Image 1: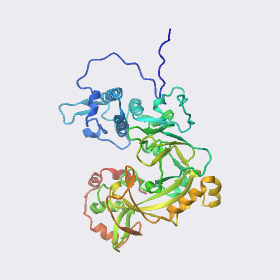
Image 2 (image 1 turned 60 degrees about the vertical axis):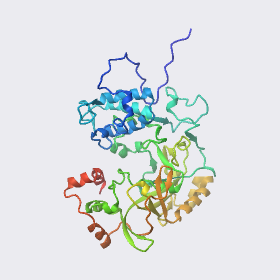
Image 3 (image 1 turned 135 degrees about the vertical axis):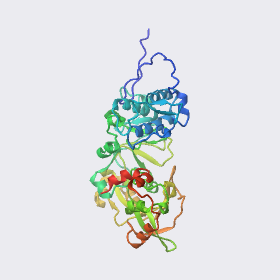
Image 4 (image 1 turned 30 degrees about the horizontal axis):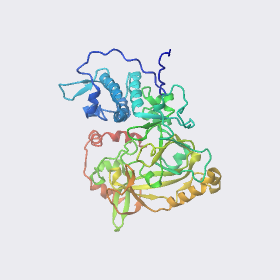
Length: 461
């Protein structure tokens, strides 16, 4: 006689699911799985009903996890998601919108007095829309992988589709990656490389990843790299994406990343005087190929070359179309060289493109010594050295971000060189004077800037 059925294993950081209760009478104002098929409960359930969403509050993170879960949810998943929104929202047939927050949640936005409740909501969505990758676990082939007690296998990557094991020793075939960030060379060295955002204390606090209601605040969950199933892409916060080529890396940070830049989403010629003054440090005087000069928007980024040891999420093999892979960290001793880059942006969208100039005078090996680099990088050193000099002296790069990596800019601007950055003096003054006056009061200015200016002003010295 066989014994009782064995309960399935549980994903990392999650409690076992409770047994289903007996069916209850259907509430006409409750949400059902079928409601998830419309736009009302689309990628942004709060925003779609004109409910305010504060950056990095519980509503913001709910929508982040919700979007990923909705893209891949099965019928049982949709039922679980409907149960969650039934707790948060109530249908309002009388309008003005189709539903509203229930009284218990109407004041929850940037903060909440119910962290345990929100934690369970977000963990449920994480379980549906993401998979976990253990950066510390050796990869084994076969049905026994992953050999972790109490972990559901379908929540992990399998070697066949996602994981890539790297040798502990560099070889001539070791793959080179590129990453570009707004941090300077000095800051990258000071911070000893690159960590996941969820592991950087001030970032985790700023984005509330360390808040008690956030799943990544749970050590058993945060120790994994997480992969977004619907997007076929790495999670922004628990994995570090590295590009497989230099040109792709130069698109980052993208110009529309408001947490980094906060630029108005319109052509520079349409900015007001106050908007130009606010971002004056990002104004550059450039020369075009016909000899004329123009004020254009510019950003600086640091592109660095790295060779990674350890576990990698093989994003492309998993089905992602972007030429990148995911890693859990990039220690300083895995960064071969760093190149400062000035990007002149052709328009406000990533696809509008940019012209990039590599500052070869300030580019450097991380060790600042070829002999030390030779010892540190072993058999991959010749390959790294060749790639470093190739990109250091490649001249200007004209490119644009695309879903498949790079493409020709949607807006063509024949920039030949950077005359002055940041721009100052009479030509910048004339450019500012030619702009519209814009908002008359600070409150109007903030409203016209979409609220992003408040975060930007906090970062100003």
